Length: 302
Image 1 (cartoon, helix red, strand yellow):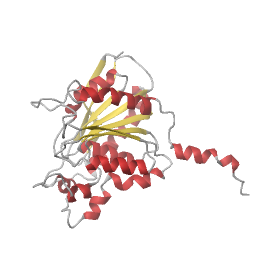
Image 2 (image 1 turned 30 degrees about the vertical axis):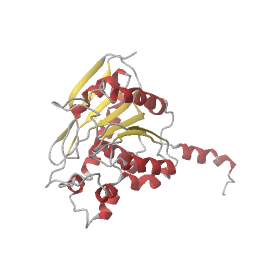
Image 3 (image 1 turned 180 degrees about the horizontal axis):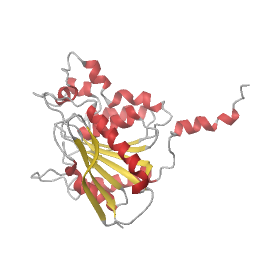
Image 4 (image 1 turned 60 degrees about the vertical axis):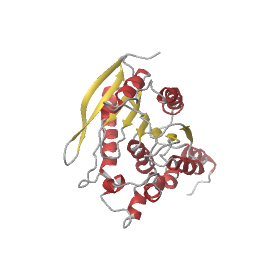
């Protein structure tokens, strides 16, 4: 049974050197303490898009009992690079949630990130690279994301006249491959699994006929996560490309009720229930708990 939803628009959560950052908030109308939290990060090739694209998803997910925050972040131009700034914007949103948690009745030990395309990149990179310890990222849902900038630059599904990743970093790829490696989520998998606070599950979704980002981005990322024993689920929509996961004014599709989103919705809700809602650990990964459990069997050093 879904709840009635309350909406707050254009809530300021941070400030950059150029402007204030805003978010739209969606929450159940029933007053409940300890609400699990979802942060929605829009796509748009790092250069366009806005929080309003997630209006339909925000309302639906809040109706399922989540506090939902759809955020804006810095967008790149040919003269304004936004890495690592856009990642810092995600972190500002997370810190705002921590600051607001008591007042708004939020459970910051139960947070999930959802992003599409560029938003999926930011969600995955944040979970793997930042690895916060004062709150917990339980899950990341990445929809047709890019996870290895170097591989995408070397093997694009089609030739690009304007490289969106060069605008993101403000650097030409050929002379700066190392910088692109350091900005890729896949780079931080091995480091993440050794962190005592990392305990994030992934759900990767992509279109098999994607002509914007190579579908191998999701395939290979899935393989790398699995090799590192990170729990990951996948869904490939074989007959779709870079489909509209959310809505853009004037463009048909993207509603939760549209194909293939209506098929993905119950899978997403089930994944969130099993990862975000049922999370009980804060600040400790499964691996770290296993290590700590062995301490009583270790000899004391005097």
